[in-house]
Length: 191
Image 1: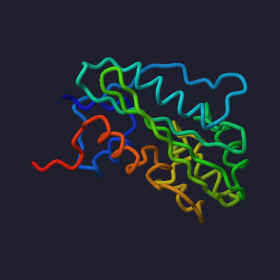
Image 2 (image 1 turned 180 degrees about the vertical axis):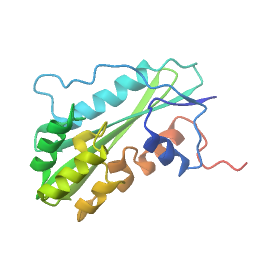
Image 3 (image 1 turned 60 degrees about the vertical axis):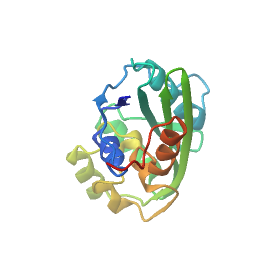
Image 4 (image 1 turned 90 degrees about the vertical axis):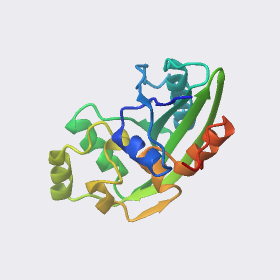
């Protein structure tokens, strides 16, 4: 049995390490991540996590973990910004408001795919022009849903969360451990 992480995210690898797990392989799938017309954030995140898990090539006994993190401002999906201008628009829209961070996790073993989601509420303060420009210049917004990562510089912009910190980072550890146990992967094994 091999454990395959279907993600190139260093954060997800670090979060698995909190469970004492090092993936045997890292195989990020290449799927279309564009939302479907009228698709809402929670079903979107769950669909992507499951599609990613099904797209990873694995043996019948291998365990595949995939996830998708989506930032939702109401019904609007804020994905990974295409450029600094879009990142600025996202961060400005999020400023002074609560939003949701949805991370869906899918674990596959053979033909069986189990999934769970973590939904957290996050409040970001309004950013001054100086804060916004410094954050954009840092480049940390690149490749991150909503244009920020709570575990980096943007953590200074977030005075309040309700939910899962690891879920906001990109892999809710409690949900992931439960899914791994459900497919027979021994999370708490002794060496």
